[in-house]
Length: 132
Image (cartoon, rainbow, N blue to C red; front, top):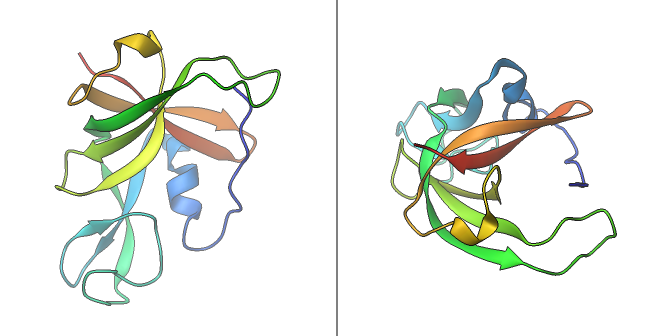
């Protein structure tokens, strides 16, 4: 599936390139010990500057999803799933991704998922698959 790639910077580089080593790297604060996403230089919970990327399990669950049937470009295979995934490490630690490797019509709320990575140029896009 064609994808627009993110612009890499000092704050997000670890997140977008952690997949090279099979790691989903999420920023964690040393002050309050909370994870947060998207990555940034300041903890959104306690305003600490002591933050850094930390490897997480890559396991989570589907909180919500939508099936997209609109072929925005000719190369786009439809339908595809856009989901909000909550990671297992912390309630509320969520981000938007795609569910891949299965029939899109079989995706369900609370379905367990695990991260996989799609390597495109210098980025490893975190996608999710059903976790057995």
